[in-house]
Image (cartoon, rainbow, N blue to C red):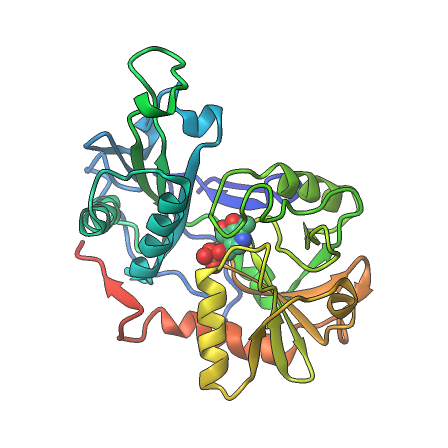
Length: 340
Ligand code: PLP
């Protein structure tokens, strides 16, 4: 197994495709990989991409350097996940993707049903029971190299399923992690690059990750230009105060994980509100959680070097985190079994 950990800059922990695909998870915790073997006689084992109508091993995935998704970040995407062989909320992911595409005037050129089918086929061919599944729509490229005339571009859909990539690996989700509030950068607001459309404008998020590294923390919670909480590099922020949940109503992605956390809260009788969360409210929180497809529900134990609560994962966060992972095995409308 090749395990790459770069907590400082990428904020992601990756396990190389094709190799073994599990990493350590705390014993007895709610986060446990499936126990299975890949049939490596298939070239698709361990990762698959769908590009321009063709399924291919993830290692062979290539797109044009002239795609405006690359050159102009003219793109939207989503990341769904598979856990224990079940894909989670794919419908919601594709709805959010197509809604973002519509707002950006990107045309997927295929139906929702076709996108869903290709996505599930990528996972199925990959054999991965735990997978990070990326669906991207770009404005594509033209006949002429470097074409930028918006009316002459192809519009492209790219889909791939690879081994799980973690923004917060299992141990951090169980034991908690550390964050800063960046001093030098704010999250782009809706009057610039609309953060409610999932996008690859990560300049601010990457600068915040570097600042976190420089200041000895794992990650960052960015404020917006009004000093309210926006989001972090790849996650939404939810705070707990007096037993209630609060999360930003603007300048943050409407995360599928946050939606799930809010639904779980309702089932657990916990009041949950979307509203402005000021920087003061963030620092005064009883608990803070980072929530994302690539990291479940991760407790933030300290902010700018100061403990949040007693510096341990709080009871509300822990209860929601464990319910979240239990959902991955509960038959119902949120999961669909992949036909391997
Ligand atoms: N905010 C940003 C900037 C993200 O990139 C992500 C996920 O990658 C999220 C929030 C969380 O969204 P979701 O729960 O849909 O994964």
